[in-house]
Length: 327
Ligand code: GLU
Image 1 (cartoon, rainbow, N blue to C red):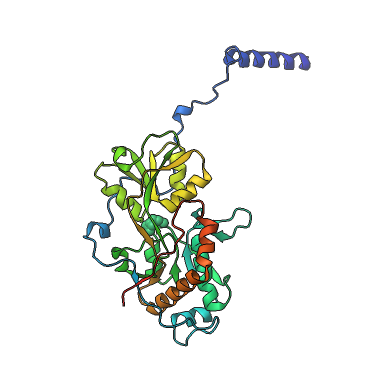
Image 2 (cartoon, rainbow, N blue to C red):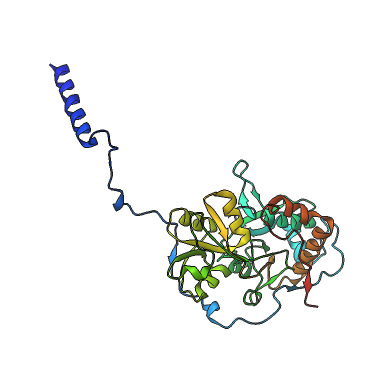
């Protein structure tokens, strides 16, 4: 009796399923139109301009840093009383970096280690202080968190695709320029857009606190700026069709292109972004030290090796920038 009832239930269920299936068509089990697409945390559409970007930008030469004061001291023997001696005594350099930007600062998925062109610069500084490039405590900072981390003394340096500009020079120091990037546009491979001007009324994504979001906001075509915490959030929003484009440094966009064959970088550079290493305002001795480290990296060929390793396929400039000093 129980067996008969069970097979009856089975037949009824089978009938119900085939009836719904409508002659072999796929079954639509959920009403997908009611599902809201997930979006990254802290995403903001049309954010208000930050208080600082409302003020007129001060004028300066953003690339002009402080000249090294003589040759570097021997590794592990920093001068008494210097910022570098305090770091040596602490046992680790504290570096603010990114972990989300492929080619510059990202986690190697198989080892978990941070790697990239910016990470190479951090390791050179640690090597010059300790004789050991591994004596680093990395702190992940967002684009928006870079200035605060330096002002609060939470990090010794920020090496994170950081454009030296006059507004930022008001709050921190920068090393000499170690790479010059430029802002460009990233779109879906099916898009016909080639410039920001063609995207009036459309959503364009960039990281909060970046020079890129300001450029997007100020574009006369009246784009809809969408700001997020991390650059990878922009890539995901583009992949999901939640924004029409991402716009930032060609270096960062090159990392996205390398990860996703369905996106393309288009149009020319429309800004200049000279990258400097951020250092707290009071630590001028460290600025001179870091500039000596950069000079040595360039003259020894280490800069070029690092460039070839990370940026060789990006179509960038394989020549290191000439250092510029204020004095
Ligand atoms: N170079 C630009 C900046 O410093 C964009 C890169 C970034 O936000 O990491 O704001």
